Image (cartoon, rainbow, N blue to C red; front, side, top):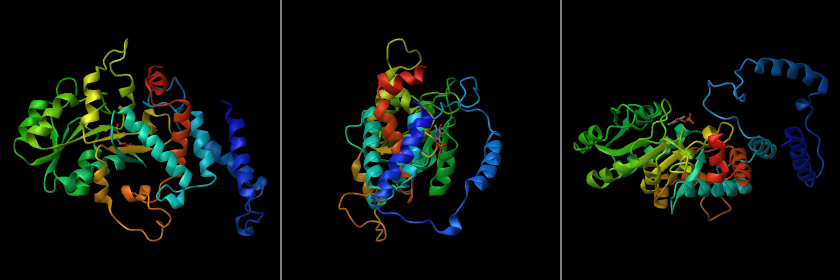
Length: 337
Ligand SMILES: *Cc1c(COP(=O)(O)O)cnc(C)c1O
């Protein structure tokens, strides 16, 4: 992809559409001439070099791939319109793209029903899952492994829930016996299982934990913010260290979080939370007379804790998934190489 070419085409396309609304002059207070801009831009691009070259294949300090050029073009093109995915009225096109990409993510995890949406980050996505868990199990806490992402403890604090860090085995996976011991007290209503810990890439034995849900009446939430897309490779021929059992078990858990801005080739500002039971939408119930007018269909803001959210993130993900879908032969291949 020739980025320069497509960024030019993006500007043309949106300009052409904008022109159909008739000419106008921006207010002089906003005027910037090219000479003035050039000087500041020079300084700006100079300052941006105070960065590590995250995009470079020889830079190994960051565990992520750079955003795909398709994602960059998708993001910047939509940004020229600047839709807000809070409400259908804020961005009908990108709201539709968000629903389609979330459905693709739900299918990737094997969910046959779902309710979900994109978020600004994995932290907010996990917060939403724990919020719903709290509404369903008021007064009970959350267990997660000692290797789980630090934000689980933090979000428990935010939500006023007690957190229970559980020791891990030598492979960095949650110790199921230690977990069961805590569940026996009846104080825990939700277990967070991590599919790909941030430190070690360890995958908790999600398939083994399924039996605990029935035995102790707990909710199972999977934090696959970091590792989620590796489900595309699980159990495939020639792939070592990714047995399929824990990954296939995600389909039977109550909720899952994945960060397209980690291994989904997206720029920052793109997490996702997916619930298996669409009925949990009732916990988000609120009214917003300023933003919800046109539709009897659910607005994305009606099923998320955040209000304004960049429609451009959904646009970037949609465009990327059209070209590199979340399938073993699509995004799956990019994870190996
Ligand atoms: C990165 C990460 C998070 C937090 O996600 P952000 O998008 O950085 O907010 C949560 N859980 C795991 C396992 C992660 O790797």
